[in-house]
Image 1: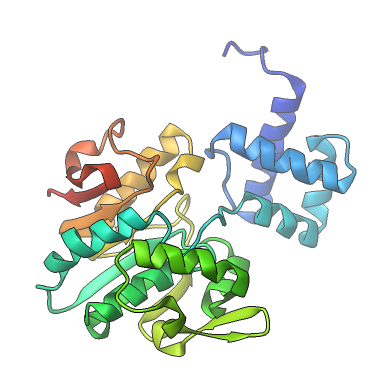
Image 2 (image 1 turned 180 degrees about the horizontal axis):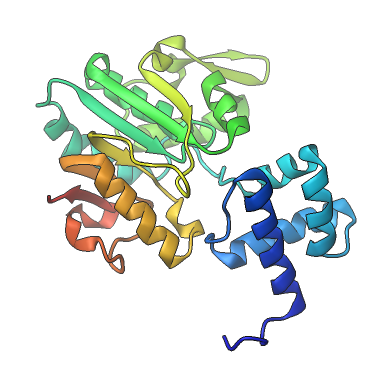
Length: 276
């Protein structure tokens, strides 16, 4: 766009994101702008503020208000065994390869509230591999990371999760892995024992070394092309040779400048393998 053609709202939004980065160090400047704008417009309406400039003024001076914005901008849409066909492919195509390794390192990047991390733990338990696996579960948002560590979910969601689990090739019953208490489902402690939760920001932080498998599903869609490319490079740097990368169903490496670093393993499930 030619300089001077931006509307005032877009300028104010850009300045708000710059201010958040300068004040708090969280960098949303390369997130997909339409998604960021929609989320912040919702917060604007809830706050009774009139503009992103007013929001910027409040966010810079009120830590609690900023933390609300941070939650708004977090990507927390997830579920256990989300996209069951993906987990079925993981079990049939990738797990047999990983089983040949003496020790396996897995990174769940952007793990949100942890449902997919525990799905992986269950799968590894059923394949009798969990004792030789280390899972790193990271997210930039420490509020959702705390939820992930607690492993307590609304029991009403378990019906859908149980259906997903069975469609994904689950060998038993999902109810074997949690205890229901009132309206909550508390996952068993055994699932947590090889999971290390840690804060990590895909936008600003560095690589995790020598991973055999990276899961980052339905996160890249919230980034613009430049940020997507940087994160794909980060994943390439974090994988060992022949390590696997799993993306979401609407994501692809096709337009990434780093696509040649990978080969497709299960194309329709967006599972890739690092070539070099």
